[in-house]
Length: 82
Image 1 (cartoon, rainbow, N blue to C red):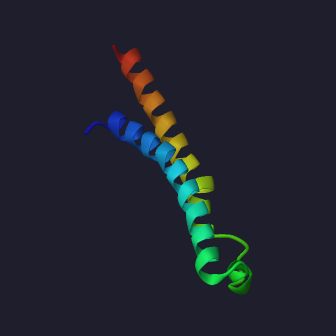
Image 2 (cartoon, rainbow, N blue to C red; image 1 turned 180 degrees about the vertical axis):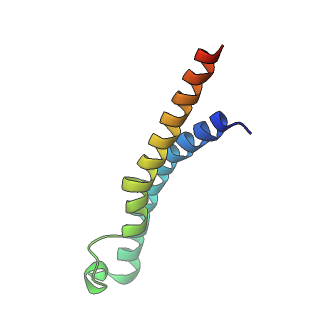
């Protein structure tokens, strides 16, 4: 597998992972409220479900930027080289 393809896959998975993480964040948040009561998040000391939120806000955008920039750089290098 070429590096160009790896960067494209990283960008695509990060883009899709953002939406999956947002969906899972909301589902887990709501499910825990349904199962353990409306004050569940206050009782455990958190205001929100943090894991999928951090994936959606920090990890996925960084992965997308790395994938997009890397694939553009390799694409331009290939075109200039020919």
